[in-house]
Image (cartoon, rainbow, N blue to C red; front, side, top):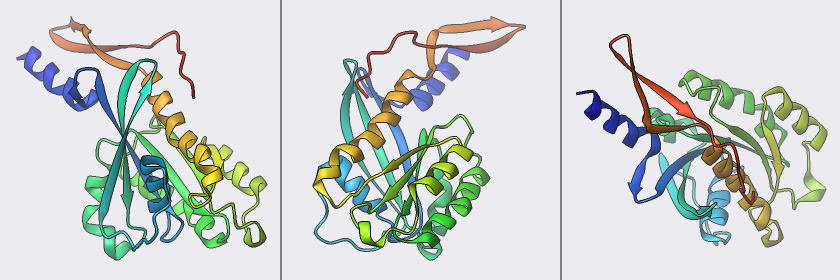
Length: 221
């Protein structure tokens, strides 16, 4: 019975879909029209969409990447920023998440102020504090319209233990920076503690799951 339970847990934890293939679920959160969908398009497809419509409910895209010889699928979940489009799907959206990307529009101060609400929603759905989170200021190509300073954004990111990225999903010159957002998370997740079958031990008549951390990393991120 313990072996069956462990096998099921390994599938859930590591999300194995084939030999040496894991899926990392990264969710993208923020107000409507901050560019969440465009960021996911830029990362997974390498281009800016010619036309976008408001996301209704939840959508996701994925990209296979190679890190230290391992092929990993990065699954990026995009959600509607408007409450009326996301209410029925929000529970599913936060389930089994591995990392969170909070996005604001550098040209809209309101989208930056609303970040606290998104963080509270995330915490309210019991996303563990150990789940890595990053802050992304999008549309930095609109230099004449910027309302959120880097100083303010960095202060907010530091207060919430997040890395800060400023980029533009639209500007192809920023495509490498968009990749860095998701690749940095993928590298971090790969380096996190892994649940290994050989680490199962019995203690006091119960199954105890221990974890092992990789000591070396040659991640290019």
